[in-house]
Image (cartoon, rainbow, N blue to C red; front, side, top):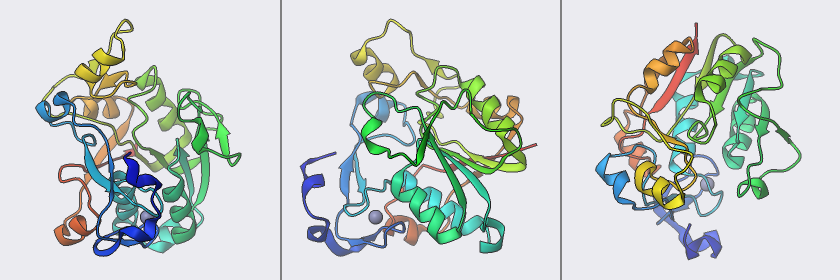
Length: 251
Ligand SMILES: [Zn+2]
């Protein structure tokens, strides 16, 4: 996040880009991410230095993509009153999903060091590897760029599967390279520099490869990929060229 984050959002007013979450029209979005060489080399999806953050609500390209997924794949009747678990919730996305679709949203976060300040009391303290909810409870779960931080992916996926209703949908975006067939697990001994160099971020525990699909299937979550066909809108919302929604349905 650059210096421009501290400037008032109206200075960025314009007609080139649009935030579907807060409705702001901007000539420029704010910068996020890093240009580490591994990100370019492995074409890591959902990473990299880019100007994509809304100056008004702070939404990122991936938050706006998830909102479009809901808009394009469900009718209002399919969403009203449905239970959604938002893990490590992006504030503006959560608020918008609740107001636009009247989803019944439960928010949870582990409040990991460095991320704590963003959450208020409405966010339950909890771990995605041990969800404090009964089985078959949620219609939707959003777990957006979380699984690269958790100790055990299989345990987290099991919990997501357990707490979803049959036919429920999990959205599990992760930084991923389709150039590597197997997820690269970081070593405990790696320092921040080695994690940046090998995984693309200092606090990531792994870099997912194309085997992520198999891991979802093993957890009995059937992947359904979605990306935007409307290229004009995609550009207006400044969504990543290669990022697609990884939604999966509980069998
Ligand atoms: Zn916005």
